[in-house]
Image 1 (cartoon, rainbow, N blue to C red):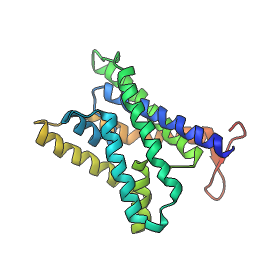
Image 2 (image 1 turned 90 degrees about the horizontal axis):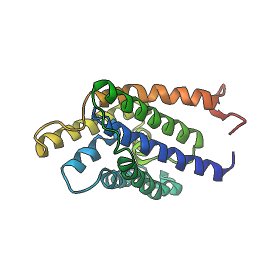
Image 3 (image 1 turned 90 degrees about the vertical axis):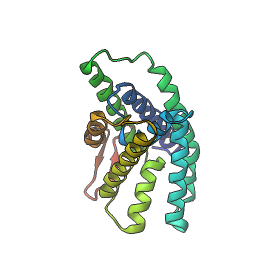
Length: 217
C-alpha cells in the first residue's frame, strides 16, 4: 500500500469516526468517553461540539510536544489539519443525523451501537493506515512513552479522567450530569473489541506482533 493511499485511508477513517461520534450523541444515551468533555463544554457555551473538539485536541497536541520535545516527530504536526477535518465533520454529521430522534429506549440503543461500530471501524482503519494518530490517542502514546507506562492502562486512565472532568463541569455549569450515561460506559467497553474484530478481518498480525496488510489493501 502506497503512502498516498495510506493517508487517504487515514482521512476516510477519521471521517467515519466523526460520523460515529455524532450518531452516539444522537442516541441520547451519552457520548463516547473521548467526546464527553468537548460535548459538555459545548452545552455550557456558545460553541459547537466540533469547535470544542478542535480546541481541546489542540491542547492535546501541545501536551504531546511538551512531553516528547525532540522525540515528537515533525510529521505529527499533521494532527492539526487532520483534527480540523475531524472536527468539521463532527458538526457536519451532527446536522446530517438530525433526523435521528429515538422514540423509545430500544430505538436509542440502535444509534448507540451503530455509532460505536463506526467509531471502532474508524479506529481500526487508522491503525491499518499507520501514518498518524488523532490527538486523543497521541497524548496517550506521549504519556506512556514519557513515563514508561503501558499504553492500555494510560488509555483507560485518560478516558476515565475525561469523563470525570466532564461530569464535574456538567455539575457546575449545567446543574446536573449531561452527556454521560450508560451509553458512555457501553461505548467504552465495546469499542476496543469491535475494533479488534475489524483489524482481524482487514489485516493480520505476524509472529512478531506486526500488522500485515491483506493483499486487497
